[in-house]
Image 1 (cartoon, rainbow, N blue to C red):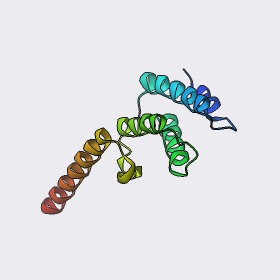
Image 2 (cartoon, rainbow, N blue to C red; image 1 turned 180 degrees about the horizontal axis):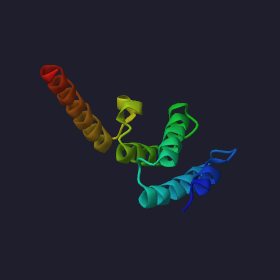
Image 3 (spheres, helix red, strand yellow; image 1 turned 30 degrees about the vertical axis):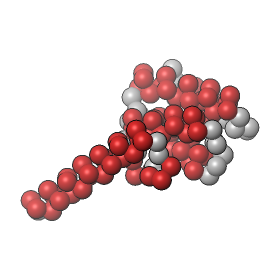
Length: 110
């Protein structure tokens, strides 16, 4: 799986559930091979999240898959807490608590 496969999967004009699902399938395979912190993966995940936030992607199951990819990549600052599933809310809250603990430990040491 190459970065060009992900770019091609994102290059659709009509955001039908089938097109979005196909893109998520390609992106998931890419993430499994290259990791969620790969630049191409991060860019694609953020683009899909943006489409979801703008209402371009409306299917709740597809939105949940996008949120899961965000969780896998650690992109919690980009998520809207009000729209998260309970699984993602747990992860979001845990990440926020860890960030707050890390920040206060840095301040205490510094």
